[in-house]
Length: 244
Image (tube, rainbow, N blue to C red; front, side, top):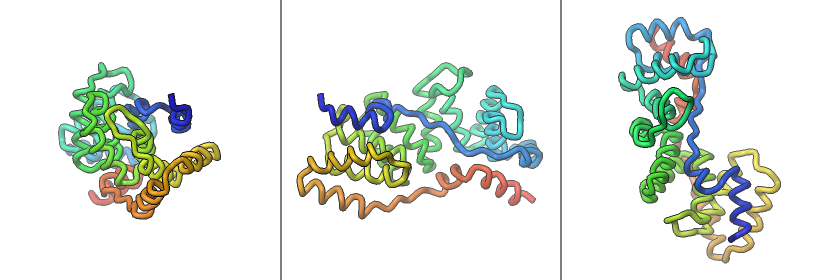
């Protein structure tokens, strides 16, 4: 067993499998002062307003916390075409809460709606679900999409995957490059940076050069949907403003 590889996985708070299968179903939420406006829009079947109300019920920000009503709102918004709501329904089927029996196929179906629309977090989750199915090719393809958007979790997962995951050819240059890009976007610890330095010292000059080129040429390109999803409260305010 490669002790360095095991230690690396621990530094990323889990094994390759844990990273690939990690389902990050969080998102930003609107605050309570938006609720009346959102409720007015929801009454006219505005899917985005219904989605934000679902988030309020899920988190208890602005409305009493109620997972059941949150799921009901997400289902309704998803049926009306809101892709972020579809993602949230997928989260429930992916094990969030106790309202629905976990169903990987339904989780994948719902999350693919948001992934195909360009949501980086959904793309990372879809990669996890394909990995669970044993479809390494699809998992890597979706992981690459999330990595291309600069999603830190996808960068960490990519580094771990190319350090040795079933069905994936190890690539030291990609491991070092993606881990460096991940550290640049997080509060890296001294231990993590020390691990990377030691790993790079074990690479050939050619591998070091290729890793450097990957880092230098990396240009994250988040989609408008990813930016909107991360804006949370601002997106809700903008929705209300557009409807007045």
